[in-house]
Image (cartoon, rainbow, N blue to C red; front, side, top):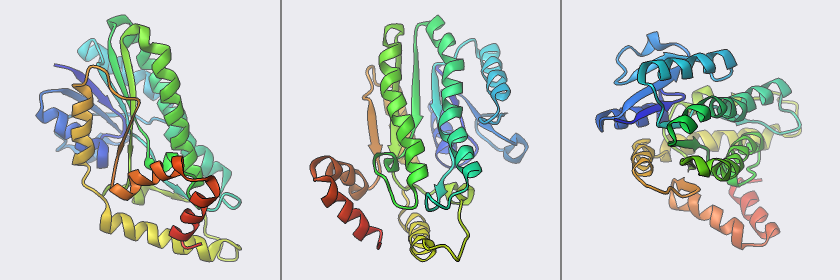
Length: 267
């Protein structure tokens, strides 16, 4: 049985993936800051904070000690972020990148020596369709996910000689708790950005609540990737419009695509 480690395994997409893989006879470990809140979890939850390097080292050592290997790492832990770039708090931005980018880098660095030793492994980075497009008032979040996308492309080539596969999954809007855990780094009603930002913020929350997809879709894709000998570099999963927007960006002139985004965002 393959051993899978999922960061952010207590809710949302991470929990769905963990439950699904457990049902299909994988040995699954997930991370959470407080396992005592999830005693009914179907798989092993380990106390770990992806922002704390000592926690990550302890986490990898624990799983290796228990199972003697890690076959699949799924970098799923992440937080959302909204706010106009000019008014966003720098401490909030740093917190976002620590969770969405630097945390995954550190856990990858800790896992790779073990995967090289066992001469096999798979790393799946959960990014976002937002990482392909600079979305107004979500530019900081989009940047963090875009950075992880590009990192994946480079890492694939660096580790290919060790039989280690690397890919990413870019989800669109899914019904998870990310809205509740999102950093809304802006509350200045006197700001010149407030009116348009607040309208965008409300529309975004309403869209996720009404149109967000079931995370099981991502779980099934993860299962498919694990059983694929040579995974693709990029996988996108979301509504037709969300995936089609990436194609439009590639084929349309930049200014035309920007006008479409402005109209869609009601700016």
